[in-house]
Length: 542
Ligand code: C2O
Ligand code: CU
Ligand code: CU
Image 1 (cartoon, rainbow, N blue to C red):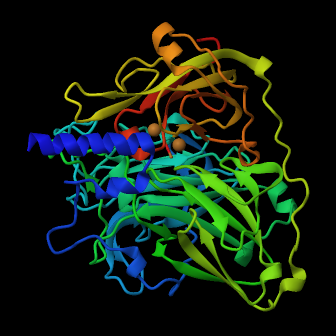
Image 2 (cartoon, rainbow, N blue to C red; image 1 turned 60 degrees about the vertical axis):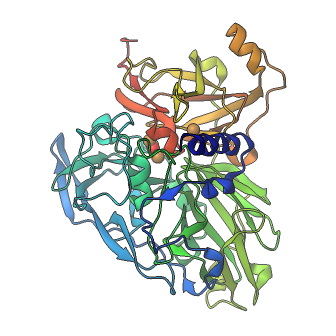
Image 3 (cartoon, protein in one colour; image 1 turned 45 degrees about the vertical axis):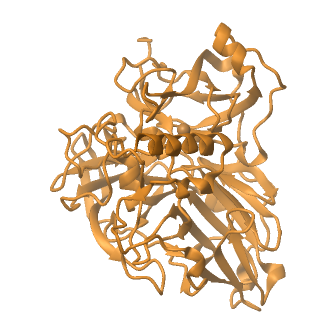
């Protein structure tokens, strides 16, 4: 038995090192939480493709207006978003899937907000007693004395006051709720809300606790980008199903330590459907894409090889459209894309997430009813992105990304700056100051690093001598600084830190003083302490 585990683990190590992602699913001894005997894994290649229409996420409707008890001056639109369990059909030929979501939907309803106009959202927990997946009680914050089912909602990318940010330890149980105030004092962009409960975040999001949140503003409206029918949100989530249509999530071969270092599915939900199709007119469309997966990276492309124009990133519009054949998206990242179907009247093409895997079909009509009124072209200039000057930074922090094996080698911890979650706060920027964070990636993996509260820019990425760093604790660069990709050259809130490179980001810590978090957005890493608090100090206190 011991030997068998050792083999499995060394294969896991191999998989991690070589990046042979698909092999993870085939680990000997790996089993899934929900697949009881008789419910083997579904092979998505056996499903008939493109038989379900792509659902358009529903728009949330306010339940009224209310005053924020912490700031009773203004009346704000008030939304009530209820987390619960329900069944949904992810494919015509599959049994309904038990999942979690908001107001009976996963992804949940889209909250539409205007820049500068606040909203109140009451996040209510009405989840059932039992979790859908196996909890690992060894993880920080998920110990046995914590309830299995608990949640707290974070609005990813929001400049929100700390008490509304969804601190991972501020979870609440069924029957409770939390009222959050989002002032929306930020540029137009697509945010997303999702669970953030300490130690079980990967399981709660995997169960379906996520949804979109749009911030819109006049500047963007004036650009005349495709809108209404011609603006389509796409929430991409990789999942694995049993043949009877139920979600399955892996556990490690060590029963006492079920956590796995990354989950990779074999099927991709697009707005909650497998292999949907979308009927489009032969004109320009805008797609607002979120990678809501736990660990999967997507390389988006069109089957025709036609370029996609990226017009925005996590935190809003780029300064100009950036054409690309492939758009990469790490977990947590968003891309605002424009696709021109005007040359494809009467054709069918597909959106791919890798070399071969097709996830969504576009059926282009021969002609469209109201094409005459539509902007057929993108503006040449979008929104100026003023670079944050390095000289504006009051300090540079060197922060390592590292992974550690437990002495017995059966599990791994990923840490930021070498510190555990519960160690004293070490990143304490002063409100309204600019800082550079140098992310020194000592691992073999790409880690998408996300900071709450702030938007940032990527300065550069640069290879360094890892061995020299381990021996002398000093950075010796072995390559030139590389600028961000054109599709990353805007405002970001989640940045890919490449292996054996130093990725430098620059941000102004504006908005609010208080306690926030930063973390890797590979949810398995985040749940195993690749997450740290940071605290914005009021002016004059740093
Ligand atoms: Cu997508 Cu800490 O969040
Ligand atoms: Cu966030
Ligand atoms: Cu990571």
